[in-house]
Image 1 (cartoon, one colour):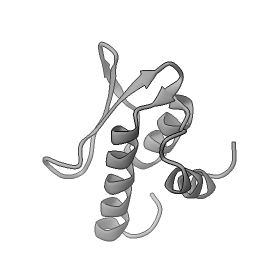
Image 2 (cartoon, one colour):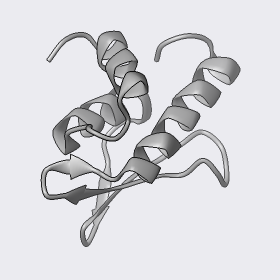
Image 3 (cartoon, helix red, strand yellow):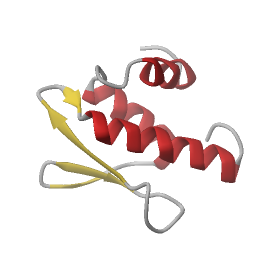
Amino acid sequence: MGSIEELVKQIKRNPKNVGFDVICKVCGYYFGEARQKGSHFIYKTPWQGDPRINIQNDKGKAKVYQVRQVLRAIERMEREHGTGK
């Protein structure tokens, strides 16, 4: 695995084939440690409401719609709080 920025670029290019461990690493960098509720990993964002960060492991991969939510949250984080973390 490369740097977080490189991982995000790869995810943007192919959101349909993202490993669950990769999306967890990216989410951990941007949103801190996840709390787990059953099969869901939930990350705290500095805002209320959407996009929420709630991901599930689907046979070692992240679900596509959840990857897109993560990408929207990263974009919002960068827009509102500067680039990167």
